Length: 261
Image (cartoon, rainbow, N blue to C red; front, top):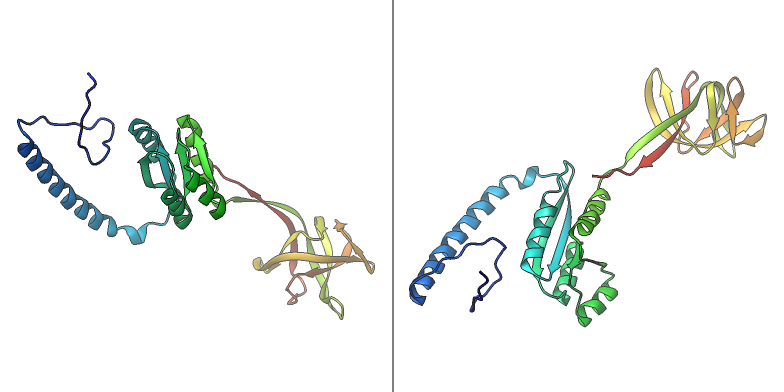
């Protein structure tokens, strides 16, 4: 049975219980008692949380949510808090009811948070401030679409996977000094191919001593883009001149692959 309650200072969450008292004085006493206990609990919880703050190493995505009604706000918060990942975490720093205002925009800017309006729009001042501060406000009226946006934003915080493809390797036969290019590694391609502008590893006695980029490849005094198996060439590596005979130069490609939660 729906009822209307007057005189409330704050909005309540969906599913909250309420008590009926015989008079106003008794209600005030019960409210004061519950408020005192609630504040004590908050202090204890905060102190316990502080013990683990130093060990927390997840990247956090700050989120501000403004909704039209309390039920929508609670449902969206619960759904976002269920998103779990070992490396990133969604942190709701504000969830409130009503139109998006200037304070919401300023908080989003200061905390680098994403600002979500669920069935609400910003007032004129907030819209102008968001444009000036370059704060992007996202609007939704379906929960799963808002969740998809949060998931994508969280995925953007993940470090990408690196996929390596080895192109080939060459063994250094002799080291040359060239005035225009510094040290050049005279090499013979043992397998695959060596490509200019590809990534390169210098391997000495089975140990990687340097990782960089192939700047140029020379073949019979001509600069070329690639050299195949069995051919000799001169190779220069960016910011590296400490070549040794018998070093192996491994040419490879490194591709970043974006991860998703």
